[in-house]
Structure formats: structure tokens, C-alpha cells
Length: 254
Ligand code: PEP
Image 1: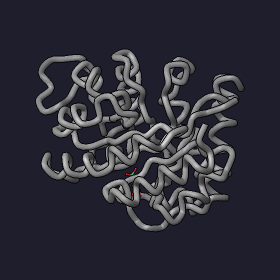
Image 2 (image 1 turned 135 degrees about the horizontal axis):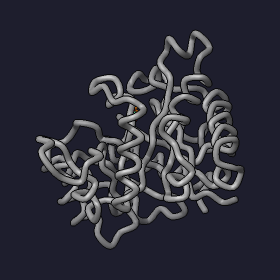
Image 3 (image 1 turned 135 degrees about the vertical axis):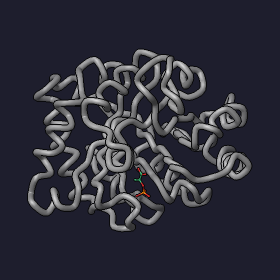
């Protein structure tokens, strides 16, 4: 089963609109030329519109960093899936920073994924354990709960991607080893297979995220079960992000 690798850059709450324009204009021509890998930039909401203009007609795709689950109404400050449809193709859902700072539960995340898919968006569904859970040997139990509560056969048939992001590795400079990430992603694939069947498990893309950079991306991409990366800090540096995508293409481009 061939799975097209995907590298997504999560800019988080960084860049003004002018900074976003400059960053996309620097990266876009170089990213466009790299084939065999899906390249997704996830700038802040306010820059999505201008990013769409710059990337139009290129192979660079866009994603949002969050979405609400209602289509419209009295939800001040929220962005609905209908507002994002047509603006971007992907949306990150369940990022650990959303779970940690904004109290998003597995139940809320499930509603968001369902609403995003209904609007034609492809969710990048983040799962991961805390350091305490990891050290207590609870990683598989935590991931299993996240997957049971917020995943459905229909999601994966609709292009939902899973991102395994151990929380202790995000923004800390301390990535998981390639072996550890591969073992855990292998577990996630087996879990999805038990839940939804081997056809879905073999076709769903599972990314690793957590302090990925140009120096360690190759270690992850060489693992058969790892289909790409969700990149935070390093996606804000044009040269570094281009190098990550280039290496992913060289190792596993289709
Ligand atoms: C992320 O934001 O999803 C992430 C993995 O961040 P970083 O690469 O900075 O650890």
C-alpha cells in the first residue's frame, strides 16, 4: 500500500500577516519544486486568505490550526468549518496545546473532526501522551483512549491523517528517537486495524511530531510506518523547512 508522505508546518501563534507573506513567498517556489510529498503550511487564521493567493496554482497546500464544530451562530471568536472550506484543505485538530490550554476533550475533538470532514476538510488528528504518562508506562493506554473516543472508520475513509505527538517532545528540542516513534506509530496502526480493519490501517497516514528538524527528519522518514511529520518551530525557518521536505521526498517520495 503506497501512502503519499505528508509534511505539515504548524506555525502556531507566530507571524504577523506581513511576516507570513514574506515567509510563504520565500518557501513557496522551493517547496513547489519538490515532488512526491504533500506539503502543507498551517499559518494563523488571519493569514490564510493571503496565503491562498500566494500558493494558488502551486503544489503547496494550506491547513488551519483549529476549527469549531458548529457551522454558524453565537460563538464569538470561533471559526467554523464552512468558513475554512475553500480556503484550505487540511485542519489540525486536537493539538496538545489545544487540549492543555483550552481544555479540549476527546469528545470535543471528535465533534470537530466530524464537522471538519462534513465541510470537506481533511483533519490532522493529533494524539500523544504526557511525560508523566510516558514514564508511568501508560502511553498505549492513553493513545488507545484518544483513538477510541475520537476516531471513526468514516474519518479515515475521508482522508483524516493521524499525528502522533508525544507532548514531552513538542517545542522542547527533545524529540522521540526514530525507533521509539516507529514502535508507537506501529502500535497506533495495529490499534486502527483492530478498530476499523487492516485496509484502513494500511492506508491511513500517520505522522510523527515533536521537535522535528532538518537534522533528525531522515531518522523518522526511514521508518516504514512513519508517513511524514507535523513540524512546529522548524517550520518557521524557510531553509530548514525546505530541507525537511526535500529529505522526506528523497527518502520516501512517491
Ligand atoms: C507541533 O507544534 O505540532 C510541534 C510538533 O512543534 P515542535 O516541532 O516545535 O516540537
